[in-house]
Amino acid sequence: MRVVAGNYGGRPLKTLAGKTTRPTTDKVKGAIFNMIGPYFDGGRVLDLFSGSGSLAIEAVSRGMDSAVMVEKDRSAQLVIAENIKMTKEEEKFQLLKMPAERALAHLSGQFDLVLLDPPYARENIVANLEEMQKKDLLADDVIVVCETDKEVTLPEKIGQLSLRKEKVYGISKVTIYER
Figure (cartoon, rainbow, N blue to C red):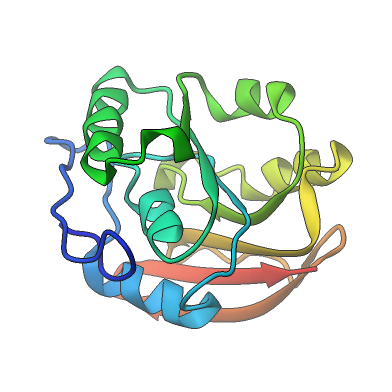
């Protein structure tokens, strides 16, 4: 796995061994960013189920100013820390070592891009997005990217967010919301 494009393009990323995380393939990652960008002129990204940190690192590589990465799994946290070091711009990344729900209670400020790629068996995307809107964590022109099992059907609207695009890649479905 590697960073697909941008300032860190081509650099290798470490992944977690085993079945506790499901890394987004380079192909799907490239497709996601082509759907939403592919490049950004600043902004703040939240990666709520960070895994290896690949999606948040890709977003910063493509022009986001900073990223908050949330991960509760200790092994994944170590992989994220190594991947952040690879960027040589550690100051652009903040890793919160806690479950997503606890992180949502602590977060402040607004995010321009939100990445939700939860473990397939424990998806709380609707509840997570409702909580973010209640806490005013989403910028007016926010883009939300959800990666789920292809069988999952997300609603057309979640609060003020509207479904804009949806595409299936193998076993995964990518759903894009905008305000």
